[in-house]
Amino acid sequence: MIPFNKPYLSGKETKYIEEAVRSGKISGNGGFTKKCQVFFEEKYAFKKCLLTTSCTDALEMAAILLDIAPGDEVILPSYTFVSTANAFVLRGAKLVFADSREDHPGINEASIEALVTTNTKAIVVVHYAGVACDMDTIMDIASRHNLFVVEDAAQAIDSYYKGKPLGGIGHLSAFSFHETKNIIAGEGGMLVINDERFIDRAEVIWEKGTNRSAFFRGEVDKYGWVDIGSSFLPSEVIAAFLYAQLEQLDDIQRKRKYIWDYYFNRLINVVEKLEVQLPAIPEFASNNAHMFYLVANDLFIRENLLARMREKEVHPVFHYLSLHKSPFYNTKHDGRVLNNADHYTDCLFRLPLFYELDDQMLSQVIEAIS
Ligand SMILES: *Cc1c(COP(=O)(O)O)cnc(C)c1O
Image (cartoon, rainbow, N blue to C red):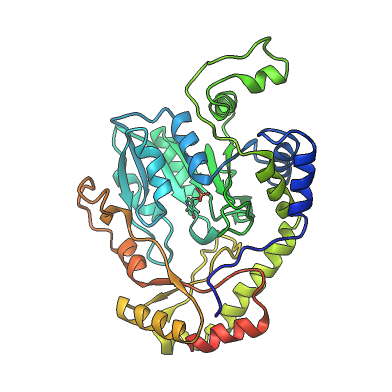
Protein backbone atom coordinates (compact mmCIF):
# COMPACT_ATOMS: atom_id res chain seq x y z
CA MET A 1 0.00 0.00 0.00
CA ILE A 2 1.42 3.40 -0.99
CA PRO A 3 -0.02 5.96 1.45
CA PHE A 4 -0.81 9.54 0.47
CA ASN A 5 1.76 11.01 2.86
CA LYS A 6 4.52 9.86 5.17
CA PRO A 7 6.31 12.35 7.43
CA TYR A 8 10.01 12.54 6.60
CA LEU A 9 12.71 12.75 9.27
CA SER A 10 15.96 14.38 8.19
CA GLY A 11 17.94 12.68 10.98
CA LYS A 12 18.86 15.32 13.55
CA GLU A 13 15.39 15.95 15.01
CA THR A 14 15.84 13.88 18.18
CA LYS A 15 19.41 15.11 18.68
CA TYR A 16 18.26 18.74 18.66
CA ILE A 17 15.26 17.97 20.85
CA GLU A 18 17.63 16.37 23.34
CA GLU A 19 19.80 19.50 23.21
CA ALA A 20 16.76 21.69 23.85
CA VAL A 21 15.65 19.52 26.77
CA ARG A 22 19.13 19.39 28.31
CA SER A 23 19.60 23.15 27.96
CA GLY A 24 16.97 23.65 30.65
CA LYS A 25 15.02 26.09 28.48
CA ILE A 26 12.10 24.22 26.92
CA SER A 27 9.37 26.88 26.88
CA GLY A 28 9.11 29.11 23.82
CA ASN A 29 11.29 31.87 22.37
CA GLY A 30 14.63 30.25 23.20
CA GLY A 31 17.69 29.39 21.12
CA PHE A 32 16.09 27.07 18.56
CA THR A 33 13.12 29.41 18.05
CA LYS A 34 15.56 32.23 17.26
CA LYS A 35 17.60 30.00 14.91
CA CYS A 36 14.48 29.10 12.94
CA GLN A 37 13.30 32.70 12.73
CA VAL A 38 16.72 33.96 11.65
CA PHE A 39 16.89 31.19 9.02
CA PHE A 40 13.82 32.62 7.28
CA GLU A 41 14.78 36.26 7.83
CA GLU A 42 18.17 35.67 6.21
CA LYS A 43 17.28 33.23 3.43
CA TYR A 44 14.17 35.02 2.19
CA ALA A 45 14.73 38.56 3.54
CA PHE A 46 11.45 38.41 5.49
CA LYS A 47 11.39 41.46 7.76
CA LYS A 48 10.32 39.71 10.99
CA CYS A 49 9.36 36.09 11.68
CA LEU A 50 7.64 34.65 14.74
CA LEU A 51 7.21 30.90 15.14
CA THR A 52 3.68 29.87 16.11
CA THR A 53 2.04 26.63 17.17
CA SER A 54 0.33 26.37 13.75
CA CYS A 55 -0.47 28.27 10.57
CA THR A 56 -3.99 28.52 11.97
CA ASP A 57 -2.57 30.48 14.91
CA ALA A 58 -0.46 32.68 12.64
CA LEU A 59 -3.60 33.57 10.67
CA GLU A 60 -5.43 34.36 13.93
CA MET A 61 -2.56 36.66 14.91
CA ALA A 62 -2.85 38.35 11.51
CA ALA A 63 -6.57 38.98 12.02
CA ILE A 64 -5.90 40.48 15.48
CA LEU A 65 -3.07 42.67 14.12
CA LEU A 66 -5.31 44.04 11.37
CA ASP A 67 -7.95 44.95 13.99
CA ILE A 68 -10.57 42.98 12.09
CA ALA A 69 -13.93 43.68 13.79
CA PRO A 70 -17.65 43.04 13.24
CA GLY A 71 -18.78 44.91 10.13
CA ASP A 72 -15.48 44.36 8.30
CA GLU A 73 -15.40 42.33 5.11
CA VAL A 74 -12.57 40.04 4.10
CA ILE A 75 -12.13 38.75 0.53
CA LEU A 76 -10.69 35.24 0.24
CA PRO A 77 -10.93 32.21 -2.05
CA SER A 78 -13.70 29.70 -1.37
CA TYR A 79 -11.44 26.84 -2.40
CA THR A 80 -9.19 26.75 0.69
CA PHE A 81 -8.72 25.21 4.11
CA VAL A 82 -11.07 26.29 6.92
CA SER A 83 -8.29 28.03 8.86
CA THR A 84 -7.95 30.74 6.18
CA ALA A 85 -11.56 31.67 6.91
CA ASN A 86 -11.92 30.85 10.62
CA ALA A 87 -9.24 33.31 11.73
CA PHE A 88 -11.29 36.22 10.39
CA VAL A 89 -14.71 34.85 11.41
CA LEU A 90 -13.38 34.63 14.98
CA ARG A 91 -12.94 38.45 14.90
CA GLY A 92 -16.49 38.92 13.57
CA ALA A 93 -15.67 39.58 9.91
CA LYS A 94 -18.03 38.87 7.05
CA LEU A 95 -16.42 36.60 4.45
CA VAL A 96 -16.70 37.52 0.78
CA PHE A 97 -15.67 34.50 -1.25
CA ALA A 98 -13.86 34.83 -4.57
CA ASP A 99 -13.72 32.17 -7.25
CA SER A 100 -10.61 30.25 -8.33
CA ARG A 101 -8.85 30.84 -11.64
CA GLU A 102 -10.00 28.64 -14.46
CA ASP A 103 -6.50 27.23 -15.02
CA HIS A 104 -5.53 27.02 -11.34
CA PRO A 105 -7.25 26.64 -7.92
CA GLY A 106 -5.71 29.93 -6.67
CA ILE A 107 -7.86 33.07 -6.36
CA ASN A 108 -8.94 34.62 -9.68
CA GLU A 109 -7.30 38.04 -9.34
CA ALA A 110 -9.58 39.45 -12.04
CA SER A 111 -12.65 38.79 -9.87
CA ILE A 112 -11.41 40.60 -6.76
CA GLU A 113 -11.98 44.29 -7.48
CA ALA A 114 -15.73 43.87 -8.09
CA LEU A 115 -16.02 42.42 -4.56
CA VAL A 116 -14.48 45.44 -2.81
CA THR A 117 -16.91 47.63 -0.82
CA THR A 118 -16.41 50.46 1.69
CA ASN A 119 -16.39 47.76 4.41
CA THR A 120 -13.59 45.69 2.88
CA LYS A 121 -10.54 45.54 5.14
CA ALA A 122 -8.35 42.79 3.75
CA ILE A 123 -7.66 40.39 0.91
CA VAL A 124 -6.43 36.96 1.98
CA VAL A 125 -4.73 34.95 -0.74
CA VAL A 126 -3.78 31.27 -0.65
CA HIS A 127 -0.85 30.04 -2.72
CA TYR A 128 -2.47 26.71 -3.53
CA ALA A 129 -0.01 23.84 -4.04
CA GLY A 130 2.74 26.38 -3.34
CA VAL A 131 1.99 28.10 -6.66
CA ALA A 132 1.86 31.90 -6.44
CA CYS A 133 -1.27 33.99 -6.89
CA ASP A 134 -0.86 37.00 -9.19
CA MET A 135 0.57 39.21 -6.46
CA ASP A 136 1.30 42.35 -8.54
CA THR A 137 -2.35 42.61 -9.53
CA ILE A 138 -3.53 41.85 -5.99
CA MET A 139 -1.14 44.30 -4.28
CA ASP A 140 -2.18 46.97 -6.77
CA ILE A 141 -5.89 46.50 -5.98
CA ALA A 142 -5.06 46.59 -2.27
CA SER A 143 -3.06 49.79 -2.48
CA ARG A 144 -5.69 51.58 -4.58
CA HIS A 145 -8.44 50.67 -2.07
CA ASN A 146 -6.32 50.93 1.06
CA LEU A 147 -6.63 47.25 1.98
CA PHE A 148 -4.29 44.86 3.74
CA VAL A 149 -3.06 41.68 2.07
CA VAL A 150 -2.46 38.49 4.04
CA GLU A 151 -0.72 35.58 2.33
CA ASP A 152 -1.80 32.13 3.50
CA ALA A 153 1.55 30.62 2.55
CA ALA A 154 0.90 27.37 4.43
CA GLN A 155 1.94 25.37 1.36
CA ALA A 156 4.34 27.88 -0.11
CA ILE A 157 7.72 27.46 1.57
CA ASP A 158 10.63 28.13 -0.82
CA SER A 159 8.37 29.20 -3.67
CA TYR A 160 8.46 32.41 -5.70
CA TYR A 161 6.44 35.01 -7.60
CA LYS A 162 8.51 36.64 -10.36
CA GLY A 163 11.57 35.73 -8.29
CA LYS A 164 10.23 37.16 -5.01
CA PRO A 165 9.79 34.64 -2.18
CA LEU A 166 6.16 33.93 -1.30
CA GLY A 167 5.35 35.08 2.20
CA GLY A 168 7.43 38.23 1.65
CA ILE A 169 4.95 40.20 -0.46
CA GLY A 170 1.75 40.79 1.57
CA HIS A 171 1.63 42.89 4.74
CA LEU A 172 1.48 39.68 6.79
CA SER A 173 1.95 36.01 5.89
CA ALA A 174 1.40 32.64 7.52
CA PHE A 175 3.34 29.39 7.00
CA SER A 176 2.57 25.87 8.22
CA PHE A 177 4.88 23.11 9.43
CA HIS A 178 2.10 20.57 9.85
CA GLU A 179 3.27 17.03 9.06
CA THR A 180 1.60 17.17 5.63
CA LYS A 181 3.74 20.11 4.44
CA ASN A 182 7.21 20.14 2.81
CA ILE A 183 8.99 21.10 6.06
CA ILE A 184 7.40 19.75 9.22
CA ALA A 185 7.38 20.01 12.99
CA GLY A 186 4.34 17.82 13.69
CA GLU A 187 2.21 20.88 14.37
CA GLY A 188 3.79 24.28 13.83
CA GLY A 189 3.60 27.53 11.93
CA MET A 190 5.06 30.98 11.49
CA LEU A 191 3.83 34.54 11.16
CA VAL A 192 5.82 36.78 8.81
CA ILE A 193 5.53 40.53 9.36
CA ASN A 194 6.59 42.44 6.25
CA ASP A 195 5.00 45.75 7.26
CA GLU A 196 7.18 47.22 10.03
CA ARG A 197 4.22 48.96 11.67
CA PHE A 198 3.03 45.58 12.97
CA ILE A 199 6.27 44.22 14.43
CA ASP A 200 6.10 45.48 18.03
CA ARG A 201 2.42 44.66 18.47
CA ALA A 202 2.92 41.19 16.91
CA GLU A 203 5.45 40.34 19.63
CA VAL A 204 2.99 41.44 22.31
CA ILE A 205 0.09 39.40 20.88
CA TRP A 206 2.47 36.42 20.54
CA GLU A 207 3.44 36.65 24.24
CA LYS A 208 -0.13 36.59 25.67
CA GLY A 209 -0.64 40.35 25.43
CA THR A 210 2.45 41.22 27.47
CA ASN A 211 5.55 43.21 26.58
CA ARG A 212 7.74 40.35 27.77
CA SER A 213 9.92 40.36 24.63
CA ALA A 214 10.77 44.05 25.10
CA PHE A 215 11.54 43.35 28.78
CA PHE A 216 14.06 40.61 27.93
CA ARG A 217 15.75 42.95 25.47
CA GLY A 218 16.06 45.46 28.30
CA GLU A 219 13.81 48.02 26.60
CA VAL A 220 11.38 48.27 29.54
CA ASP A 221 12.15 47.68 33.24
CA LYS A 222 9.09 45.53 33.98
CA TYR A 223 6.60 43.72 31.86
CA GLY A 224 2.85 43.55 32.10
CA TRP A 225 -0.46 43.28 30.29
CA VAL A 226 -0.51 45.81 27.47
CA ASP A 227 -2.87 44.39 24.77
CA ILE A 228 -4.97 41.37 23.83
CA GLY A 229 -3.01 38.26 22.96
CA SER A 230 -2.76 34.54 23.46
CA SER A 231 -0.26 31.71 23.80
CA PHE A 232 0.85 31.60 20.19
CA LEU A 233 4.47 30.56 20.62
CA PRO A 234 5.60 26.92 20.37
CA SER A 235 7.94 25.25 22.85
CA GLU A 236 11.63 24.80 22.12
CA VAL A 237 10.96 21.08 21.59
CA ILE A 238 8.98 21.95 18.45
CA ALA A 239 11.50 24.57 17.32
CA ALA A 240 14.38 22.07 17.72
CA PHE A 241 12.56 19.57 15.49
CA LEU A 242 11.85 22.29 12.95
CA TYR A 243 15.46 23.47 12.84
CA ALA A 244 16.65 19.96 11.95
CA GLN A 245 14.26 20.04 9.00
CA LEU A 246 15.25 23.52 7.86
CA GLU A 247 18.90 22.45 7.68
CA GLN A 248 17.80 19.88 5.06
CA LEU A 249 15.50 22.21 3.11
CA ASP A 250 17.46 22.08 -0.14
CA ASP A 251 17.69 18.28 -0.11
CA ILE A 252 13.98 17.91 0.69
CA GLN A 253 13.02 20.34 -2.08
CA ARG A 254 15.27 18.59 -4.61
CA LYS A 255 13.66 15.23 -3.88
CA ARG A 256 10.10 16.57 -3.98
CA LYS A 257 10.75 18.28 -7.34
CA TYR A 258 12.18 15.04 -8.70
CA ILE A 259 8.96 13.23 -7.74
CA TRP A 260 6.78 16.02 -9.18
CA ASP A 261 8.68 16.00 -12.49
CA TYR A 262 8.55 12.22 -12.64
CA TYR A 263 4.74 12.27 -12.38
CA PHE A 264 4.40 15.11 -14.85
CA ASN A 265 6.64 13.54 -17.49
CA ARG A 266 5.09 10.12 -17.19
CA LEU A 267 1.50 11.38 -17.26
CA ILE A 268 1.79 13.84 -20.13
CA ASN A 269 1.04 11.16 -22.70
CA VAL A 270 -1.86 9.49 -20.89
CA VAL A 271 -3.90 12.36 -19.45
CA GLU A 272 -6.03 12.71 -22.56
CA LYS A 273 -7.03 9.07 -22.48
CA LEU A 274 -7.68 9.29 -18.72
CA GLU A 275 -9.83 12.43 -19.18
CA VAL A 276 -7.82 14.41 -16.63
CA GLN A 277 -5.85 17.68 -16.82
CA LEU A 278 -2.29 18.21 -15.65
CA PRO A 279 -1.54 21.02 -13.18
CA ALA A 280 -0.83 24.39 -14.81
CA ILE A 281 1.82 26.70 -13.40
CA PRO A 282 1.38 30.35 -14.45
CA GLU A 283 4.53 31.89 -15.95
CA PHE A 284 4.92 34.25 -12.97
CA ALA A 285 5.03 31.34 -10.47
CA SER A 286 7.65 28.79 -9.42
CA ASN A 287 6.88 25.22 -8.37
CA ASN A 288 7.92 24.13 -4.84
CA ALA A 289 6.52 20.63 -5.39
CA HIS A 290 4.25 20.84 -2.39
CA MET A 291 1.58 18.84 -4.17
CA PHE A 292 0.94 16.90 -7.36
CA TYR A 293 -2.71 17.20 -8.28
CA LEU A 294 -4.75 16.27 -11.33
CA VAL A 295 -8.14 17.60 -12.33
CA ALA A 296 -10.58 15.05 -13.76
CA ASN A 297 -13.01 16.24 -16.41
CA ASP A 298 -15.94 15.44 -14.11
CA LEU A 299 -16.82 14.01 -10.70
CA PHE A 300 -17.69 10.58 -12.08
CA ILE A 301 -14.29 10.21 -13.73
CA ARG A 302 -12.53 11.27 -10.52
CA GLU A 303 -14.43 8.88 -8.28
CA ASN A 304 -13.82 6.06 -10.73
CA LEU A 305 -10.08 6.78 -10.86
CA LEU A 306 -9.77 7.05 -7.07
CA ALA A 307 -11.56 3.71 -6.59
CA ARG A 308 -9.43 1.97 -9.24
CA MET A 309 -6.20 3.30 -7.79
CA ARG A 310 -7.13 2.17 -4.30
CA GLU A 311 -7.79 -1.32 -5.69
CA LYS A 312 -4.18 -1.19 -6.86
CA GLU A 313 -2.89 -0.28 -3.39
CA VAL A 314 -2.24 3.40 -4.10
CA HIS A 315 -3.91 6.05 -1.99
CA PRO A 316 -4.75 9.29 -3.83
CA VAL A 317 -7.04 11.83 -2.11
CA PHE A 318 -9.35 14.65 -3.15
CA HIS A 319 -9.07 18.03 -1.45
CA TYR A 320 -11.15 21.01 -0.25
CA LEU A 321 -14.92 21.32 -0.25
CA SER A 322 -15.70 24.94 -1.27
CA LEU A 323 -16.27 26.98 1.89
CA HIS A 324 -19.20 28.95 0.41
CA LYS A 325 -21.12 25.66 0.35
CA SER A 326 -19.96 24.47 3.79
CA PRO A 327 -22.58 23.61 6.44
CA PHE A 328 -21.21 26.47 8.58
CA TYR A 329 -21.16 29.25 5.97
CA ASN A 330 -23.61 28.43 3.16
CA THR A 331 -26.50 30.38 4.74
CA LYS A 332 -24.20 33.37 5.36
CA HIS A 333 -22.78 33.38 1.80
CA ASP A 334 -24.27 36.00 -0.52
CA GLY A 335 -25.44 33.44 -3.07
CA ARG A 336 -22.95 34.09 -5.88
CA VAL A 337 -22.15 30.98 -7.90
CA LEU A 338 -18.44 30.09 -7.90
CA ASN A 339 -18.07 27.65 -10.77
CA ASN A 340 -14.32 27.10 -10.71
CA ALA A 341 -14.23 26.47 -6.95
CA ASP A 342 -17.04 23.95 -7.38
CA HIS A 343 -15.18 22.31 -10.26
CA TYR A 344 -12.02 21.82 -8.15
CA THR A 345 -14.15 20.54 -5.25
CA ASP A 346 -15.61 17.85 -7.51
CA CYS A 347 -12.73 17.01 -9.80
CA LEU A 348 -9.32 17.65 -8.21
CA PHE A 349 -7.31 14.83 -6.62
CA ARG A 350 -3.76 14.49 -5.35
CA LEU A 351 -1.17 11.75 -5.84
CA PRO A 352 1.13 10.50 -3.06
CA LEU A 353 4.09 12.86 -2.63
CA PHE A 354 6.63 12.32 0.13
CA TYR A 355 10.40 12.10 0.41
CA GLU A 356 10.66 8.32 0.68
CA LEU A 357 8.87 7.53 -2.58
CA ASP A 358 11.44 5.71 -4.72
CA ASP A 359 11.35 5.00 -8.46
CA GLN A 360 9.71 1.62 -7.96
CA MET A 361 6.87 3.12 -5.90
CA LEU A 362 6.51 5.98 -8.35
CA SER A 363 6.13 3.59 -11.24
CA GLN A 364 3.52 1.69 -9.21
CA VAL A 365 1.54 4.93 -8.85
CA ILE A 366 1.79 5.61 -12.58
CA GLU A 367 0.77 2.05 -13.39
CA ALA A 368 -2.20 2.26 -11.03
CA ILE A 369 -3.51 5.42 -12.64
CA SER A 370 -2.78 4.34 -16.20
C1 LIG B 1 -2.20 23.33 6.11
C2 LIG B 1 -2.93 24.59 5.82
C3 LIG B 1 -3.39 25.44 6.85
C4 LIG B 1 -3.34 25.07 8.28
O1 LIG B 1 -2.08 24.86 8.78
P1 LIG B 1 -1.89 24.37 10.30
O2 LIG B 1 -0.44 24.57 10.54
O3 LIG B 1 -2.30 22.93 10.33
O4 LIG B 1 -2.75 25.21 11.16
C5 LIG B 1 -3.97 26.65 6.49
N1 LIG B 1 -4.13 27.00 5.21
C6 LIG B 1 -3.71 26.21 4.20
C7 LIG B 1 -3.89 26.67 2.79
C8 LIG B 1 -3.12 24.96 4.47
O5 LIG B 1 -2.72 24.18 3.46
